[in-house]
Length: 438
Image (cartoon, rainbow, N blue to C red; front, side):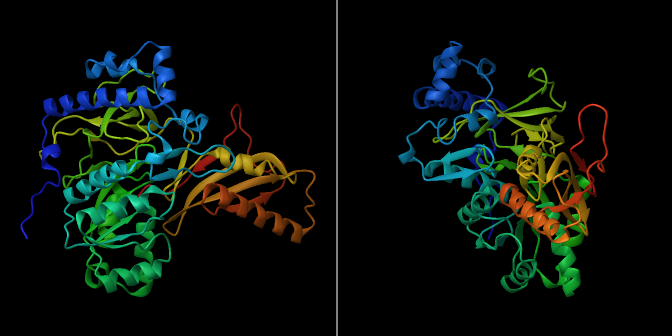
């Protein structure tokens, strides 16, 4: 069938003037919605004398204070919402049991708009109703599962909600169901190929794979090319975060030269993480996003802590929505492993619960046979009986289990003698990232 190259042409083909006019209208509506619906935002805006009618131009956005992840934690669980709870139909939450997680609420309309934005993204790279879509992301609180599921269904593809792990089953589904489109984190894409080789499966000969959506963890251009070479697919970079909705915030087009951020849904700013002033277009800074089409929990000027830049110039695909470069890192100490956001303080808080452990520890991220993993080395305290091997083994298992429950990743735990970890002048080095940069 001869399809249009655009899923939402009325929004995808807006020129810059039309995009900015729509943004201003939606920003004004969002401001009124937040002010009248959210006690948190009303109090914050009143404290600086800003009312919804104060927003006359897009430049007036800078009068609004930033929203941070700490604001979400401080108002846990529902204090930042702009609608009553009975108008919400789903929530997603970050990992973590040692402190308040971040909770994001969605109305039925929010879920539809989220699915629409991500379906638009998948259509942009060539997905069509005749395709078979397989999702290798976890479902539940992780937005990569349900986000892609609803989008693929809205687009009309046959969906295979395989979920995370069980690589042999994933490969059986590829071959038996004729999967053509797959969503996976980059490190798992390498694992899929590794097992294919072990099983004698040639992805070009034995599967119909052609498109892969990759995201949720940092990766280089070389990593993308390596995935394409291994699996015989075109791999497209995807950016999302649960505070905005999940995947579908920005997505590469077929040109693969930056991720179009859907500006009918978001206003994008790039600011200096220290001064919080705007940086010139093309320079790297911290990504700040304002939601424009959200009911349950709009966020104004949310500091994502992701470092990126707006790519200058127009994209040959014809869409004038701004393009984000791939993420360069973080302005805080968050780690991303297997698509999961992890802070060192989460690990430290768990380790501090054991009297047998001293205060020094080292987190190492490394690549083992094309799989990224985590090793936590922690020194034993004077209270530990280093001669009781069975007790130390049980302690190791207990710590591993507690960390897995907290960070949703199973690390390798090493108990080491006190004083054996390296010391440094000044701030202690707690994290080493030795992962391969393909």
